[in-house]
Amino acid sequence: MRIPRFYCANLTASTTTMILPDDVFRHAIQVLRMKPGALLSLFDGQGLEYQVQLEQVDRRQASVVLQHPVVTDNESSLDILLMQGISRGERMDYAIQKAVELGVKRIMPIITERCNVQLSGDRAEKRLKHWQGVIISACEQSGRQFLPELLPVTTLDESLSHCSDACKVVLAPDAQQSFSSLQKAHQLALLIGPEGGLSDEEVSQAVEAGFIGISLGPRILRTETASAAALAMVQAGWGDIG
Figure 1 (spheres, rainbow, N blue to C red):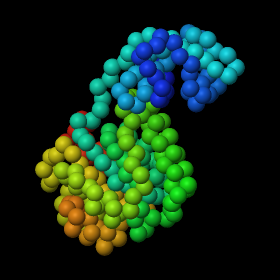
Figure 2 (figure 1 turned 90 degrees about the vertical axis):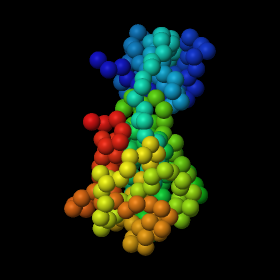
Figure 3 (figure 1 turned 180 degrees about the vertical axis):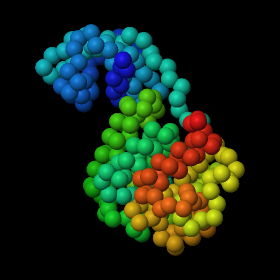
Figure 4 (figure 1 turned 45 degrees about the vertical axis):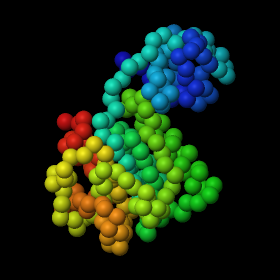
């Protein structure tokens, strides 16, 4: 039986017992109904993970005893930056979730011409907090010990001018090249449009900035499908899938 995993930012190896954070308490005790003696794993998102055992459970808090560290070597050998055009609601959540499962190191939400979501100020901060929660949940599920970095919401112009990755790719349905035609690289930036895709002008702008136009095939994919498909292809050809 798989031991439930939970993100715990204040996990430390310098103590043998600790109180569960409120969000972990709610999930483990109030949702999963875990009892004293049950085992779970806590990870800090920076590479530290421990198997722990529930020791004492009260109405409002629970304590655990750290048993032994968990060592997992499942981070991708590729350094992938996903530059994802912002889509609405569950589509953006899905794209981020699958990107984490597929091993990306960094995620940059991009404002493009066809974005249907207006983000600025407090609204942007709320969405970033929500997306951070999606990243955490995906790490808990997929067994990753390192949280991918969620970068600030950025305009397309700003993102193109600051992208220095070794291989830079933009998905474009009319492109003539495929991933199989590219030279393998350790570092990759992948630019994907929102619902409705990138405009022709934006694709041209990306190409002028050094991005290579790539097509995923004859069918037009939704943005969240395109993101997952492209990352799976990269990992199968260059990384650790397959």
